[in-house]
Image (cartoon, rainbow, N blue to C red; front, side, top):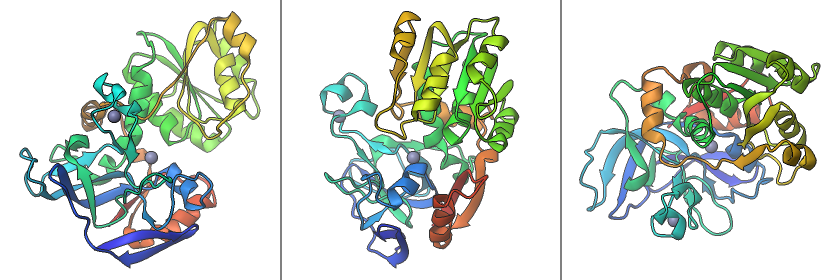
Length: 343
Ligand SMILES: [Zn+2]
Ligand SMILES: [Zn+2]
């Protein structure tokens, strides 16, 4: 099969590879679309340590069932499917509790840290365990299905956050994850959604995706503006979708006493925290990791247009164009959102 292989850091090449072998609980998927994730771009130069070449990356994908192992009885060849990026074990303490996103033995498709290697979906075929696979409705476009993983991160973040009808939410960071989280927050009942970013183009897009107000924190005191918009109380909830000290602080300073800040972004391993502000105002801080079984909900929300991803797709391109798209993303070319490759 054809595959886009990370042969060494900063080097992606189209190569011929054998089709992956599958076990009794696995499905071989003919990949039709696979999105380039920010984490792939960060893995491309070796900085994140989460991609060790040689590796086929790609974990945001959809396609058709090609064949399956002996224990798989509910699929047929040609079924349209998508899959979670996390392969959980189903046996550890956390899996048994139902927190499969916190699995002790979790592997991620298309990721190779030191401990294991699992080829991903920038290839004609990928091997996926049945338990993380979901069927797609017939009319669901493959390119949009490749964005379900991103949608699931936003839906999970909102689902673990105490949101009530009529709440005000701050969305910190209007990138891909911020914009899907924004739509999920709106669907969950937030009627005022204030998007904050440093990029006016991203803020324009946030407005188009349902933000009621936008603030550029480069030239505005964003927390003061949020207070002015909320009778001096602050937002009920904030979703931090960046992961640096400054945006995390902005999210915290924009949140009311007793409110919740859900931390989704994690670009930096450590940040500075306004501790006394958090404690004395009884602000709840919580992390949100990947997603925990929200895929069927995401498919339904997207199929009914409650969460829209079509405006977030910058380009759909053949897999062979992957190296040049990786370079453009790596060089932070302005106004690029999701790029979807078609093997
Ligand atoms: Zn991803
Ligand atoms: Zn587990």
